[in-house]
Image (cartoon, rainbow, N blue to C red; front, side):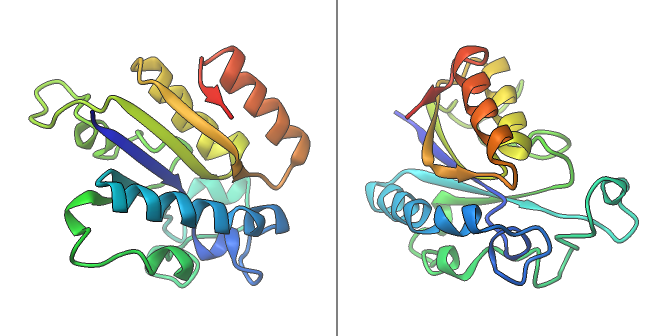
Length: 183
């Protein structure tokens, strides 16, 4: 069975105290996410890290302050997760740079998961989704997984948002509308 963890946007600009869009809620999930990534890699599962990645003139900056600029400190994966990256797990770790809410939009994620027409990779059997923000990038990635009929699990201890009401609402929508298993 092919199980893949998708860790959404656990980057300095969203997690670190100095990050442009960081929050205490995001920092609170770091130990749990690290534990899950470490266990997955030890068990031989794959981990996809999405990296929100923008250029200086990105249209998203009309909605949010500039963040995760390509090549910047803010765009980097948090150090706590970088610790798990080594040559021993390189073949089971995949990075997806994205500049929209969904990790599927104009990226190679569909092919990597074996879901694209003509993909030579074994299709993923299940996904566990972690990261930030619950109501934005996590939600829209979960929606894409649901549209592809991929069984998906989200742990409430592994996702966070800048907006607690939107976080709770999105978890409910994931479960009741998208069919995501919310634990």
